[in-house]
Image (tube, rainbow, N blue to C red; front, side):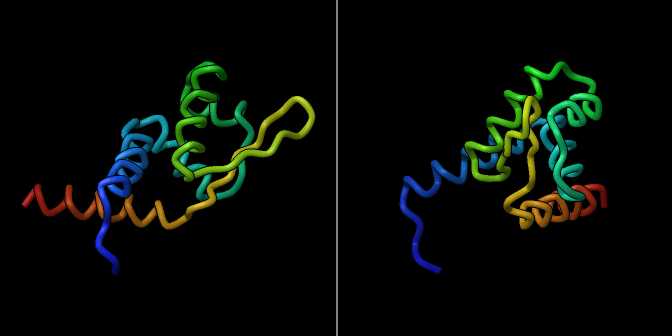
Length: 99
């Protein structure tokens, strides 16, 4: 693996920031099962659609999800499923810290 440059760490920090909210993690978990419209994700997290749209915009800007407009609805899908590996890594860290 090539040595990372400072700009690479800035990009990585953007991804971590995008993952740094429980609602966004819940949405990603749901998107790992297939695409969903904003309205479905709003119901899932119990937030208003504009709030969910802002969360999804952060995830999209980080390159984690992508969207597709169909009529009046916008559907999101997970484009980097490897992010779910991070969930497993965090679970392992939490488990180890409990011991």
